[in-house]
Amino acid sequence: MLILVAVAGLVLWEAKGRELVLMTEVCAAATDIKQGEALEASLFNVVPVPRGSLVRGAVAPDELGSLNGAVAASFIPEGAALSSAYIVTPDAAARANDSYFTIDGSWIYMCSSALRRGDKAEIISADGAKNFGVFDVGFVKGADSEEVRETAGGGAGFGGADAESRVDATSPIDHVEIVTQLRTYLAIKKYAESVSGPSLILVGKGIVK
Image (cartoon, rainbow, N blue to C red; front, top):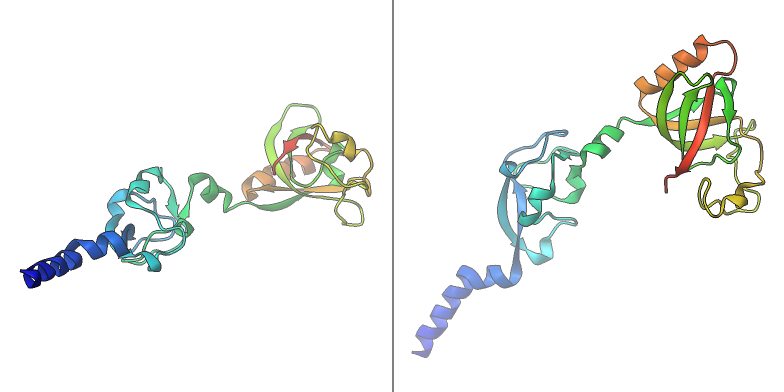
């Protein structure tokens, strides 16, 4: 009887117990998935893997529904476990084509002296007829190409409670680098160069981070 019970216990352990105690379920690619391909539940199988072998950021089966149209950040081979490193949200995917572009000082009709790296800036034409949008500010440079900073540190946010810390800067602003896509930048550049003299107003809109 004891032998039978031991054998039955061993069978149950191998059949279910090991999986319940030592394994966990993750999502693995059912086929090769190309970079940029939209991710959906049908592209994945649910497979058990040892808990000690889990990849960082592994996606559990009940998390598949939260992908919401995300795309593959890189090629995912068949059988590979899905992790957060493979997932790019639609917004992040669009921003992958963003770059730093310079708003030349000769284009700037007016720019707040309190504008700093990490703020957002709305760019409009000096006559108010064109609005090019709101952009993340990557860098704010002086004539010596050094970053413009507060002499006393601080700067908790554009127009915020600690705005007084931006009273004194290391130098006047000469030019600003914004984060955007080439097509948008070329539209700004084309307009600025088509107008005689400074033509753009940069309006500080608030801190990014």
